[in-house]
Every structure is written in structure tokens, then in C-alpha cells.
Length: 190
Image: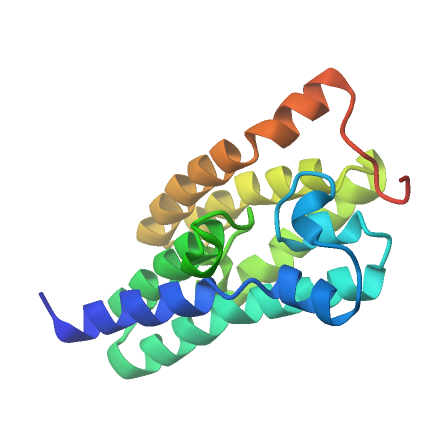
């Protein structure tokens, strides 16, 4: 096993494990984010506190904790260590060591291709504005990500994106149940 691959996995996982949603809300003096809404530590659940600035800060920090290891490992070793770092950061966000392996439900593979971030943001924004459901917008954006990667002629990343999307949808199963039951909270409503 290549030591650089091990470093990429460890670096990506540990950075991905940083619970920014929990840290940011604690520093802001709000209640424990794990006791609100879905109980996740991601930006979608932080938004449920009604503090849009905290949700935006969480989203930015969560994006950076996925982007930083990808960029660094990409510069050190190229695309394979970058993919390993992206996958590990994603898994770190979902299963952070610091929180007993219970974390958020977001995506980090988009850090591998900046245009995917733009496409994902547009998909999220369009879905959120029309449906008023942040979780539905995240699910939609995640489903579109592998298509963007395939269109960009990055089949390996598209496959990785599809695998991570399946995992994301599994982690969002409670949100999906609430969406189908009509009990999921809408953006701007408490």
C-alpha cells in the first residue's frame, strides 16, 4: 500500500470529521444542534435554528473540510490521492470519530471538480426555492452531481459520486420518510 494513499485517507477522514455545525452553533450560544430537527450536524440542520448566518458558515466550513484535503493531496500525489482524500473526508463527515461516528449528511466529492460545485449549488438553490425543502434540495443536488461528473468526461469520479450519492440517500432516510409523509420542515418555518 502506498504511504501517500494512507496519508490521504487519514488526512481526509480527520479533516472531514471536524463537526463544524456543532462547533459553530455552540460558539454562537445556541442549543445543541443534535437536539434539533434531524439531529444531524450539517448546514441543513443548522438552518433549522433560524440562524442563516450560522448555516452559511457551517456550509462554507464543511465545503472547505472536503476541499482542503483534496487540493493538498492532489498537489502532492495527483488524482488518486485526491479521490481517496475526498472519499475519506465524506466518510469523516458522515461518521466523525469525534462524535462517536454520528455526524452530518453532506457531500465532499464535489471538491474534486469546481464546476460541480457550481452545478450542485444551482441545483440546490433552484430546488430549495421551488420546494422550500432544504433536505430535498440536498438530495436533488447529490443525484445531479454524478451526472455533471459524467458529462465532464470524468467516469471514475462519476462512479465515485454515484456511490457516495447512494450512501448520502441512505443517511438521509429519515428526511426522506418525513418528505414522503409531508412532515419535513420547510425553509423559513419553525
